[in-house]
Image (cartoon, rainbow, N blue to C red; front, side, top):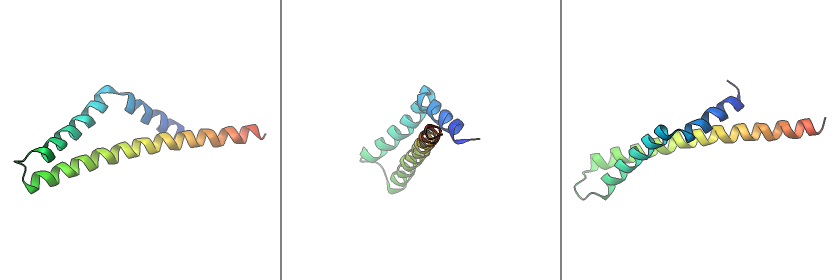
Length: 82
């Protein structure tokens, strides 16, 4: 799969309401653990892992979008110089 296709697929993910809702739900549940006085260290560790996982996924999605846009720019400059 080329960069442009990966970028398009990644953009589609960020527009997908279900995908975004799932990530928000994981983040929200994890944050609730942090704010609860009843959370033990294991629960806090798990919540931290959940937030890091969400951020890792979002970072990868954004990276793919950026990679596709960078390729578009590069190809645009190359064509303009032809």
